View 1 (cartoon, rainbow, N blue to C red):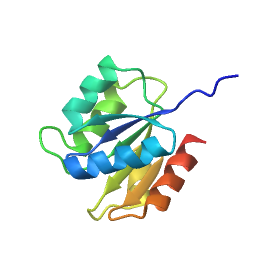
View 2: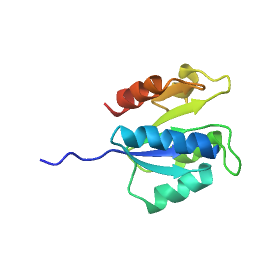
View 3: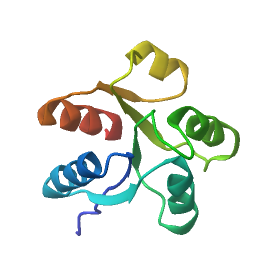
View 4: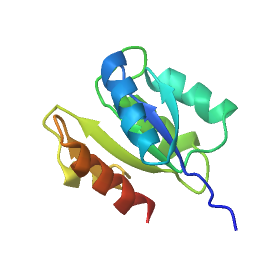
Length: 123
């Protein structure tokens, strides 16, 4: 039986951070789709196969994480896609959960912390 590769959508405006996240996640066997902001992420959701999880930065140009989350709640695919907030701003896990997210990782983070949160949210 073939193992189905899980797809993660990484929404991060910092190109170096986005590429680094993609490299780490791909080395763990995930398929990674990248977006530089919420608007690109919406385009990916419309064009690409449905991701299993979204890693979402909050501070981005064009469409920030708050507007992206609002769109997901109002018009996003059903059933909802798991979202892990990745941010350096003063948000909390409780805030993320109150806004419909399954996970939260405060930047800067250790790779193992991120991977543990991704695994937990995909389980």
